Length: 370
Image (cartoon, rainbow, N blue to C red):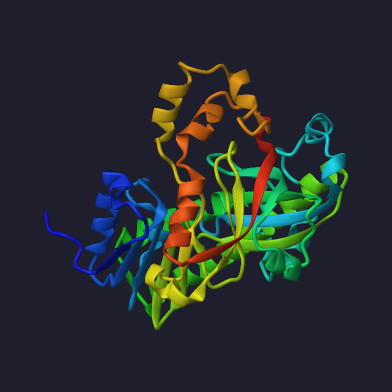
């Protein structure tokens, strides 16, 4: 088998820990005509034909399938007005009702504020979706960099909330339409096909940002608190970079300020500052989470024999899990994910981040729909 002829970089202290299937997928992408650079991040894992936890750069081509169907998927982090000492899991649990249902708010107005047409209004706007998407209430476990934490005007004793979701069905339609037109061929930058795709791509990214904002407001209102958005980062996108085009597939940006890198629902998350000195070695990209250790089918097969659903509704960190989908609760169990501590250590060892704070989960919400 021919090997990747472009520049391929793996970020990790022990390359042997990478999944061979993910490496094969990374290699196959690197052999696409016109591919210039490929980076595998510490959370690298096999996806649906494309490695997740990776960044790809081309001087003159755009590949929609490298962005995938969940265009604009990302993480938003909010600091709420609720003091940690007043947080009651049972009370918040009872209040989080009806949040899988369509949002009854002014969708057209929310879209218009982002410069999006009312035609993009959808019943899915303001909903989390399935898969690995979630909303999680957290608290600060440890402030690692007090100076930077203070500079960001953050408060230690407040409950925080992380929202992970994307463009829902909109991104799926865009990829489906594009694949029907051009298959998986790379689009020459500047061509009518590339311009048309980028226009729809940018709309989906903006829609996903609005979606996370609406989700956050729905959860804050349900919990009876207010909140302020600390950051919102996109980890599925294609953007202009260094005279070419940078595709991120499950990769956080290192050129948009602080990022949040979540672990599994049973592990810590990290607020971190990208370090620019060596960022270009990783295509200005960072791990977007812990990364899967097992596929969804493997996770369900392994864990459904070992645990009852009730066992997975509480984690080793004593956080609570709301997930009434009996299959999803196994597929997204903490054991199905890599060790987030090792992922963060790899990023630190590569000189790519400085950790600002470590966040402990209090309550993770997936879905109440069974």
